[in-house]
Amino acid sequence: MKILDKEEFRIKLEEINKLVQDKDYKGAMNIVDSIDWRRVKNVRTLCVVGEIYAANGRYEDSKEIFLLAYHKASIGKNILYRLIEISLRMDDINEAEEFFEEYKQVASNDSTQYILQYKIARAKNSSLNEQIRILEEYKEQEFTEKWSYELAALYYKAGEKQKCLDLCNEIILWFSEGKYVMKAYDLKMRMGELTGAEKAKFEKQFVPKLLTPEQAKELEKKKTETEVKAQEEPEAEEVEETTENNEPEVQVSMEGIQEKISKGIRDVFGGKTQEKNPWIWLTRPVSPGKMRFRKKS
Image (cartoon, rainbow, N blue to C red; front, side, top):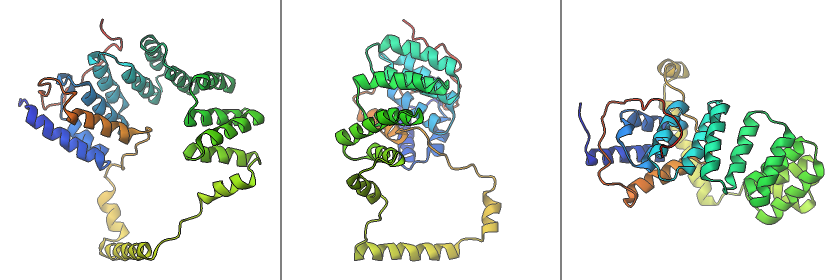
């Protein structure tokens, strides 16, 4: 069995990087599957691989790679965070709670534990009051757009109109614009509480911008090229015949997955985080197997 050297490993990582940049997570996974990752020591590299598996919906493989990374990491807080999220995606709430208990030990003062606690409560279909309580405690420590809006939406579901309205106004005041500000406007609109100025700002996002003559010309050119290409393509029946056995396009549902993968690979190629000659492994895939999640002392 051939053993790859450092240069061959670097080439494969570059291939993975390009495929990820092209959002071809399935192609990246095909390369990832050819490697025995137990022989790789770089934690960031393992985390990138875990994210690629997760992007393809192979959560069991993703979990095992993250476990490998956790056992090799000096501080595994962020890896535990991902293990909790992966477990929830696998509908394994008990394991997610076990990882969460471990997380609280290594990050006892970290406010993100409230977010994990909320995600677990939501997965367990806990009462709205319980979910609200958790996010209210988080808001006392961190005021962020996303989770403040999430809390406002819970108030709306629970019929707490005034609390929802007050929090929406707070989000709009502090953040002024952005995705969750627009969502806050939407909640206010549902409650019939949008002011004239707010309504104009909210509706503006749905008004298309006027094209310059140059942009209009370019758009017409692309339209023409598309029509010409369509004429050259086979009939729909032929296309069905040739594609019916193909795999569906990978849909990446994890928030920020592209950024996480790209950052992880940039870190690997940055050089500063590479360990001395960790790049030797077997080309034939070998499953890491089940492992206990607790880190060895």
